[in-house]
Length: 54
Image (cartoon, rainbow, N blue to C red):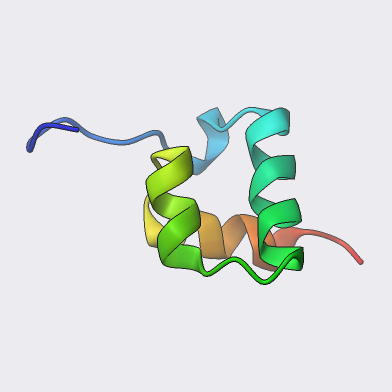
């Protein structure tokens, strides 16, 4: 992604993408790898995972 182009805010992340983030983290994939694969900010991935109900 070129510099200066904003990434998606948390509210605009699709349910499928949220599910992939949580599933990847449950499989012990590191947040840095998930952020690259899903093209999200690190804080967004961590917030998605933190808000996931278990």
